[in-house]
Image (tube, rainbow, N blue to C red; front, side, top):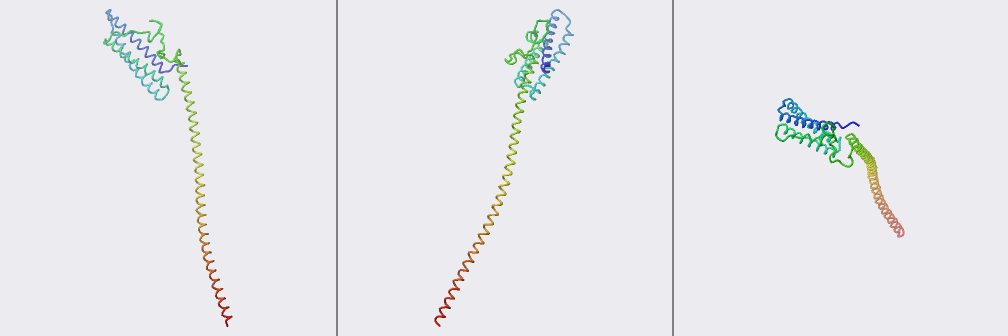
Length: 236
């Protein structure tokens, strides 16, 4: 698996800072022996400017990768520490180049292994590393991080599926409630119609009761008249 581009750029910046330290050491040696340091000074100025630009680029790409969640937060913090350390070294190299502090030692033990001529860069990423990444190279760490991200993506996909299902259930419940509301509206209308009919029938019953009472009274009056007529007839 190919190495992470950010780590490649960081590794290159570390090698450049090491080269600058070595050139400062060589320039100072030539100054002590009366040699011509003009060419080395010009090379050092260009290298220091390039190192400054490389550090700025590392910061920018790190911020972008962290914001877009291309890397885990723990890794972003660790990379930030690496950039800060590199920026501190760049400040010391500038001060050493300008003679403000003592000469910066090559310090190969921190950036290189195998002595003066090995030229094999170690992985500074593994300083104070966790047990999960101990002994792993850049590519293996990147693969491990990709696996973690894939696991998180799978979890997010599962969560999205659950949320989608809940949304679908909510829509179905909403539709069912809409249907129930329509049924309730129909029942309310039916109740209103029934109530109106009951009132009409009650009114009609009252009218019939009134008519029935009038008829009863008329029958009584007729019977009384008949009785009076009969009595009068008997008397005659």
